[in-house]
Length: 192
Image (cartoon, rainbow, N blue to C red; front, side):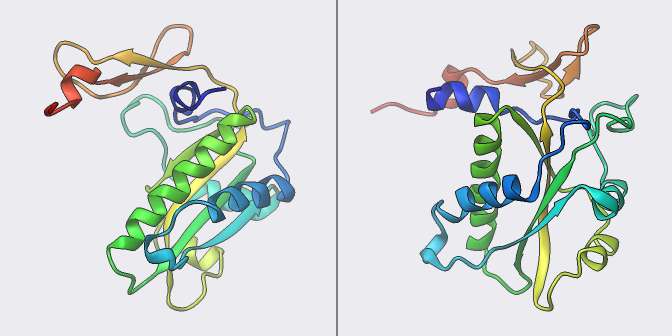
């Protein structure tokens, strides 16, 4: 798959095939992909906490909030929940370049997951007190982002930006998840 097609397919996934769990080796492979990605000043300050199945996975799921734009949906139902999580950790007193590293690592893992038919949801809406406690985050580190993973169960599509400019995603009657994206002509500020 070429990179543009991979990027188009790598939409946020919020429903997973819970009966086809990812294992620890799968999560290690995702972190291996992130490890190879660029890092500001090559400092490599990020760390990763891997959660595969079991009680910790269930507890972590309960501490996350899903799909704020879908007002009538409370998140994945039993049977559709992620089967694994990776928490991206960053230094509490890291400089603002670390935030770029978090984004690069998260996107790298999402693209890697998509390349294997897995789904990924980058979650920044989580309980900021309970999650670090549950995952026993080391002193001096904080959870920057939680990524939920599993075999994708939903179809996601890019949609043209509506005339009203709303960037809210939606699901159609068949449950297909649509994500509006601005056209290239709208994004290019200048050409020289």
